[in-house]
Length: 323
Ligand code: UDP
Ligand code: MG
Image (cartoon, rainbow, N blue to C red; front, side, top):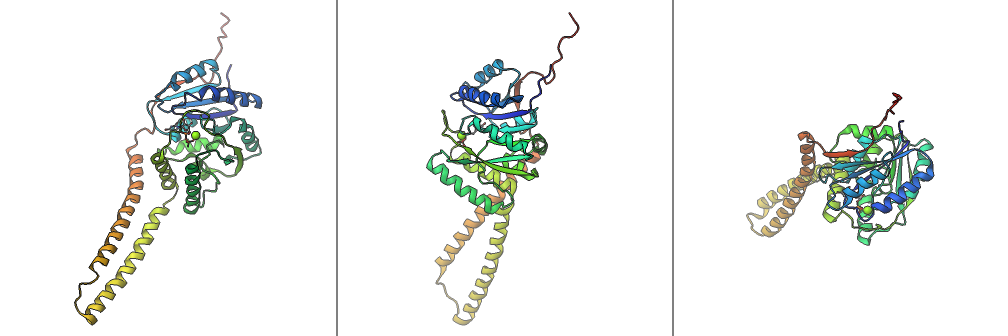
């Protein structure tokens, strides 16, 4: 008998031993209520706690429905989701975080929106429960992102509880990108996306895997992956500075002719020089962000390495030889 799921839920897991049991209970309860065949794909992204053993136990509890992908190391949340995408068997694919900040009880809402014919269902967090600095950073970031990448129409890019049609998921997998941002990538291909509000809770246990540095890296992935705006900004600054410098040279030349040789203003010139050097270094850094990513892509190293997959084969042929 083959088990073909209709809904696939993909969850990245990185050091989540404290929440896995609750995740299992609440997720399976919410999905059982929908009364549609489903599967849950949990990708263990190089956890160093007991997550690996716990995931294996979850698979053993419900081998038909729970599949586990084990990475060989830590490849990041988006790669963990991508690996899940490579393995999905359902038609509606839901992504969510393991830490229960996105309540699994909201999945029904997403499935209903998909069934109305949308190919991507984005979400925004209502009454967000995060630390104040995270809220602020997120708000600024959403504003900057909207300004830099206006084609990405989403209120809240940080909420990972989202639904995608299988067609969109297959397209995302086919890109083979190694630094990507899944909600943005999906929007590139969506023909009929929509957005729904979902509840948000505090992390139920454990700690966030993101520190300030990781958050910055993560945001650079989004900006550089979907826009060349930062590079264009430097072209514009370059043009502006060149024009100003030209005017300044003409001004100095005329002064030289009119006033004669003079040494005042050396420190002002130094200040201007340091300012310009700062801009150049910053611009170089921005170019470096793009070059680094191009380098990653051209090396063609595998974007993640799977150590093992715990799952039942897709089609199980029953022993029908009569013996
Ligand atoms: N995660 C992951 N790999 C990482 C970091 C995080 O798979 O390197 C997972 C993590 O287990 C969780 C989700 O990505 O399911 C979101 O991570 P987290 O809750 O730490 O981030 P935050 O909610 O603080 O942004
Ligand atoms: Mg979280």
